[in-house]
Image (cartoon, rainbow, N blue to C red; front, side, top):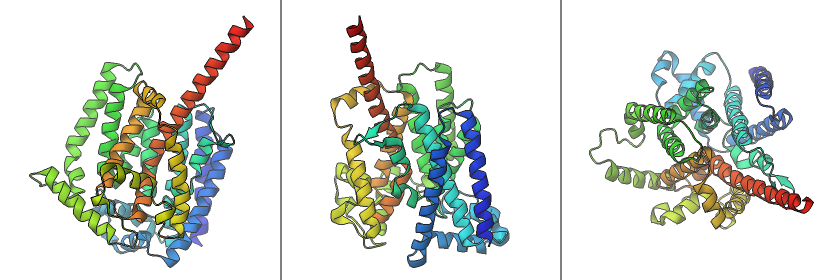
Length: 394
């Protein structure tokens, strides 16, 4: 019964959120985002059914949150315990496992709303794939992205944090609250991912083609460095390196042990430690493919990965290199965030199931770069066509 009440409350909250954003952004497509909400709920039902027959971290999170009692404040730390910290108050007031799943699924949906804002605000041009399908709509409705962001766990929270942070970084003065809120969730779930985002922001600021005041650049860089210095122990603690005297060698040992452990966790292990870096990255971005799909879920993921390959093939040309060299800050930031996170993940991921889950938090950065490139190509084509028409008219 409480799940029905939670469902109604979240439905109302969704309409309030969408109405508010539609007032602020003339381009906002409220109808599309409503469709997306119910599509996301469909995957909530799929994932919930999946948990009835398969092990799921969400059950463990709910159990820990229900047992913590008065020690709730002790859970306020980065990493796994932060999810227990978020879940515990809801459990303590008597909400069921299903209700908690709905709430965290809504967090994932909020991530998609801000992913839409992030892309549409920066790229106003519509792009068709196969001359028929709108690229942005296709990206928003990718099944694998929804499947891993509908449950009680890290995936939904960090995806929400990343997309809020990325939307806000476009106008940090006006959106400072959202910038801090998104950064907070990213840092508390995965401190090292916040490190990658800040590095990406700093590099993007300095090398983007926009004319931004030196004062603002210096301010953001100083703030980022200050945060990194203050949070360095938490970031290193992810790999248990806070007391290390040789971070590089100790990280290599951690990565090897972590990779081996994940490989043995299920029957979908891959020998990532034996791969070259290009093959590691290919595995992280595009596998499983049909030849190594470990399950029915893997078959659906293979179809989606085939689409990823198609999209990535669009930038394998010299025009993209010229485009990227002269690209705006948001493009460079997204590319760097995607590459840094991918590079780090390839050293510790060796399980295809976990790879499918982990890459969902960063793939939209790659999609944004590809989408922006295709939109720039279309804009340039339209400009050339208009110039030709003007010459003909003259």
